[in-house]
Image (cartoon, rainbow, N blue to C red; front, side, top):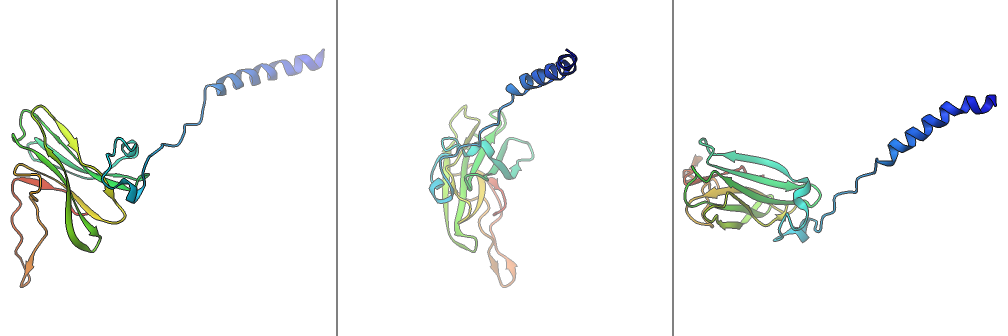
Length: 174
């Protein structure tokens, strides 16, 4: 009888503790449907890459009418542009573009665009590109989908001969 009394409180505590841990489950790892090259040209949300997305850089207009973000997914190793705007104060025409180069050393510049954000649409994003094989910047502008408001810097005779930034803004090349 003395043995039962001695183990009674311990058994009750263990039973209570086991009940607490029944509700605790390990969370499954985030599933993604692409990685690096296989993400190129794919929708980041459809592929599950937005679940761990990080903002590499964000540029917002001084009046906060338009914001552009260069997004990155560590799991997918994909990069894309995300544009958001204030429907009351932004320009009537807003295009978002992800500009990329073939490799980190430069090369041919390519783009993927959101197209023109339609009336009443406050945000959009581009398709992804392989982060490992490119450098990228995210831009918005009010001219055209293929218009780069901040073209590459041009140095002529040690002087900056780049065109001035106009009609939008971009993140830095990353």
